[in-house]
Length: 105
Image 1 (cartoon, rainbow, N blue to C red):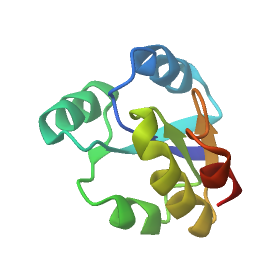
Image 2: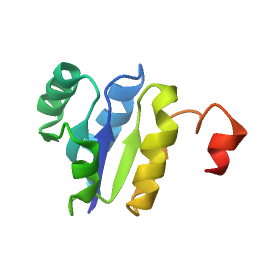
Image 3: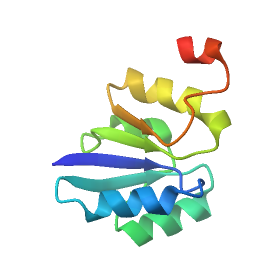
């Protein structure tokens, strides 16, 4: 079983991706983080997972194998670097970042 953390319900395609994960037998959504607490708590309730307001605490959880990044693009670089440093698999629904300098990081 692959345990996934949802990283924000911000993006227009969030529900499509999260529904796909929720329907799979080989994945489980364990926790959700969002920089908008109200939106995050509502999405976590919808998917039957924990809401974690502290991104670093989310990354430290043993029940998170990978993250699905669906935040605003300007947040991607820092969140993905943190996830990579925590040795988490990363799925991002759109561009990695805005600049090649950030991509090199």
